[in-house]
Amino acid sequence: MSFLDFWSPLIRRKWHFLLTFLFFVIVLGGLLFLFPNLQKTTVYFSVKPFQTEVQNNQYHLDAVESASKVAETIAGWAQSPAFRQEIMDTADVYIPHFKRKLSARKQNRLNVFWTLTLNEEEITSTDVVVQALISTFQKRFDDFNSQNSFPFQITTPQVFTETSLIPLSWILVGILFVGLLLAFFTIYLYEVFTDKVSFLRQVYDTLPEAVVLRVEKKIGEHNANLIEQFVLTFESPRLITTFPEAEKYFSLAPLDAIDEEIDVPVLLVRLGKTTMRELENMAALFGDEVGVIVFER
Image 1: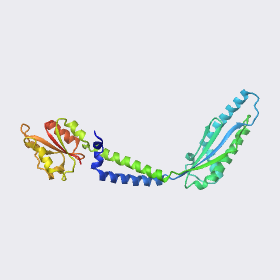
Image 2: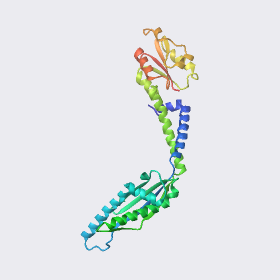
Image 3: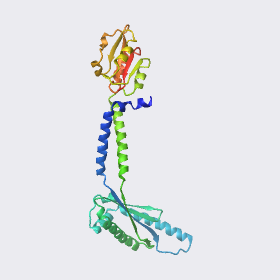
Image 4: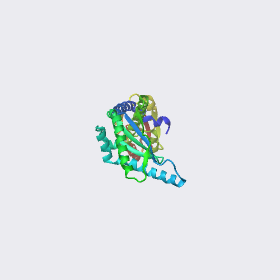
């Protein structure tokens, strides 16, 4: 299959392709309003033992290992409904689906990152929620230390805030690219699911011995003299169509009027209109001893 043959469905259906492309661009552009900008705030600190002087290497390793387990425990507090509710109560605000907007993870054994993700309608509550998070955490951490014979401490929490704004140029390029892909596949899938003959290669594969005339123009705009010369190269040619539009432009022979001993069927095929079933049925009836006129548009 040549490069041009591959693109033939889009060339034949260029208006359908353009309309489909515009439809998907409009839909994708509208969907952007369903995904508001997000602001991500990260609260970062490290866990370490109270003792700053270590007497031997083994003591140091044990202290670090213990602090790592404490950091893992702290990160798990984000999964506690009571902990999240206490943050909301302390902040005196309501954030829907807060469970999905607060998370924590341990990194490099001793570091803990708390992440708060709010949409643009909730951004005004960022500062009060972050302060509530820090104070609620500090309170729970103090309770944890009071029940632990080997106390720990945390470094001063550091707060970083960033807003996930996607540049407008990226959005436009993304919409155009995705719109093109969706329109491209829509046209191809339409012809696949409607069983259309989409490519000239399908004609050659179904009728490998047939003589084929390719007509670039649409039916009605075709070169009638060229088709007449092709038809007259056969003895007793009889035109048979595989798509209804041909009845307006050609004198056709009914199937039961063809004498296979004398007549030579000349099939009229139009890419994107003729179905594979019709083409295969003609091959089953007449074999390869036929002529084929293919309208490529």
